[in-house]
Amino acid sequence: MSKRGSVFKWAAFLVFLGSLYGCAGNRKALEEQVVSQNDTIAELQKTNVDLQTKIAEKEKETAQAQQTAQQRAAQKPSTNLEGIRKSFEDRLHGTGVIVRVKGDGVALSFDSSRLFAPGQFALRPEAKTLLHKVADAVKTQAPNATVRVEGHTDNQPVKKLKTRFKSNWELSAARASTVLHYLVEQGHMDPKRVYMAGFGQYQPVANNSTPAGRMKNRRVEIVVSPHESK
Image 1 (cartoon, rainbow, N blue to C red):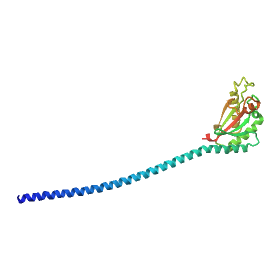
Image 2: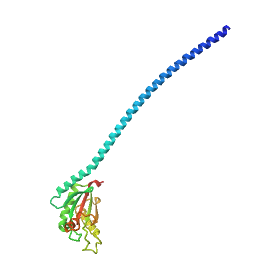
Image 3: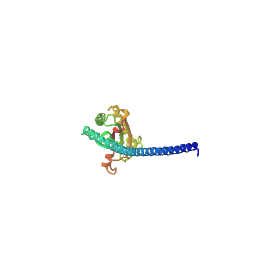
Image 4: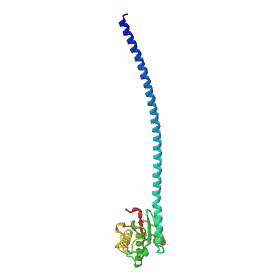
């Protein structure tokens, strides 16, 4: 073998050794990189678990807060209405007005005989003093409330003024209208917050089969609803 050929062989051998050394170095670097990436993945997974736990806790807290708010909102109107009912009862004590919670409001109930003659829809003179007291009470105790004036009758057919009133609906509506006009025009209640309804015989509070029951059913109710206010 020539000297030149030996040189080439040694050169090739050295290159081969260099490549082996380079491969070993690259492998070690890759292994170190994989270990580092695995550590990073483990840290990210731990962080993700922590975040999911915190999110679940926040969602639970939010759900509990919403439930508490809903419970308070459901209880608040009832508590407020009871307080308003008591304030009206105290203010109208001795007038004979029956005060009770009714739906979303407080009802001030009058026996129709205190306001009207049988079968009539014009106010008795003495009824005006009573309605003045009621108007003052509403303006003082619930100034921003919506007020519904309701007329109610028993189930007996209209006899007097039957040519004017086709049924008890019309009579109850006429009586509600009379009271509404007095509250607004003489009691100076805000007309934008007052409206009326005539229920006729269809919302009785007692049995119409007895005179005492029919007397209770013949009534006017002023329903004060603070939660309808705008």
